[in-house]
Image (cartoon, rainbow, N blue to C red; front, top):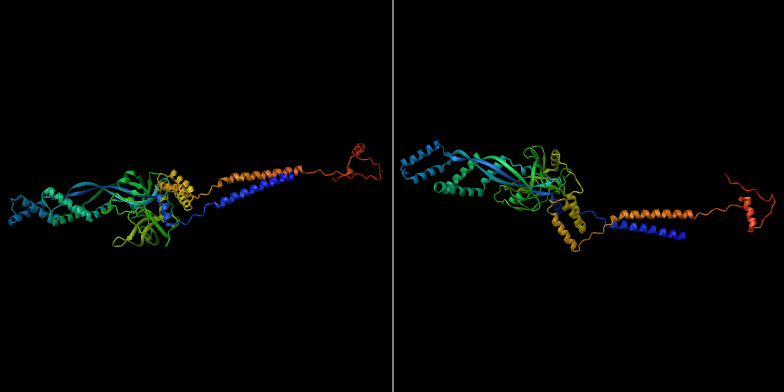
Amino acid sequence: MRRVVRFVVAGLLVVGIAANGALLAGIWFTREPAPRSLTAQRVETASRPALVLVQANYTVSTSLPTFTIPQSKNSLLIRKLQALVDAGKLNPYDDAAVKRAAVNIILANPDAYYVPGPPTHDQFGIVSTGTGFFITEDGYLVTAAHVVSADKDEIRAETLAASKDPGSIAQLRQDMADSFARDTGLTMTEAQLTTMVAFEERWLDKYLSIDKIDVKYYLGTGTVETGGHLASTGARASVVSLDPYATGHDIAIMKADVTGVPTLQLATGSPHLGEATYPIGYPRQGYLDEAVPLDQTISPTMTAGKVLTTAEQKSGWTAWGTSAQFTHGDSGGPVLSAGGQVLGIVSFAAVDSQGKQLFGQGYFVPAEYIRAALLSDSVKIANDQKSLTSTYYHALAEGDIQRFKTELLLLSQIQARSSWDSYVKDDIGATQSQILAGNDKTPPELTGYVIPAAATSGGLILLVIIVWTALAITGRRRKPVPVAALAEEDLLDVGMTGEAPAVEASAAEVPEPSLPHV
């Protein structure tokens, strides 16, 4: 019976060990493989949810004096008209002819007659767009200072530059001809229009005043429709601090009225020559470029290049130059490393006479200055392995090996945490389609059985110990007692029962009983 019990207990122990070994083997073979090496496309895909288009809507208030002919200039005009009458070239009684003659004299040399009069006030809007990226999940973001900080001198310079655009000049000629005909009933010649347009440009250069600038900031993500649509639907943001390019590093820290946003991680070291760079942003032409419509639909675009040069700046810092191409609108966007970390932000480019970027001279502000600006503003950043972007990288890696159920779980976690991510809904739909199509290769989840299996093994081991101990105790036998050690009454009892005959012996033949050693 004891052998049977021992056999059963040993069998249970062997079965338990085998089952646990099989469980551990299953966990080993179904473990996640090492993630694939990152590609430029993967870096772009994982980074773009943290990217934002930054739109600055400026309302500019201006003043400009009117053209006025003072009395002294009017007297000069009368003298010239009188000279024409005296020369028989003008009939003083023909009002239309006199009027035409006066106009011809003024338009031949407007600078000689017009002086500044009472100011006229006007307002116009300017829309500037750039790129930024979130650095904390509670809505702090980084962009270039020049994207969000146009000052009066800059606005004035851009306004004057826009007035010289061929399209603007053509519109000015038309407006001037229409207003002149309406006010005087006369028609300007082409030569007179050319003279007056040139005079208007000189007048603006000399007298245009930028009195006030009001600005509001709007943010968009995903594919963004700029202009009025973004102003009505985009998230609002405010500037926390500015480190302008003229005196600093061209960095702006902003705070958006959103939370639960994907973020990008800053690189910990400095860039190095030859390092791969991936700038990503919302490319768009300059905000005063008449060839570009205000309302555009723009998607983020990434370019690739390598760090090729550096440039010392007048305020004492070093900009790094890449061969990747920059475009208007990319300013403030992140320049990513091959590992998806932010090496810096797009700032400026050196261009040739045609405005084409010189090779290797797209310059960015390195991450060390961004980190210093954040520290100065007491903005705390953390490299959390459970951040939205890290989770997204994990989800994409699961999709690579067709573990779509696991990918769906991770994407659902992102969607629950972030209402800002405009890409996750499409990702979830695509993943669900793969599952419904039968393409999922997610292995069973075995790690949940480890604790129950360990508890069962412990129970089996305890049972074996208990059974073995019990068998050892019950199987122990008593040792035989020597005859010489029996008491006298025991010998008598034996004789009386008839079980053994009484033996009579002499005292000399019976040895003394041996006493046990103490």
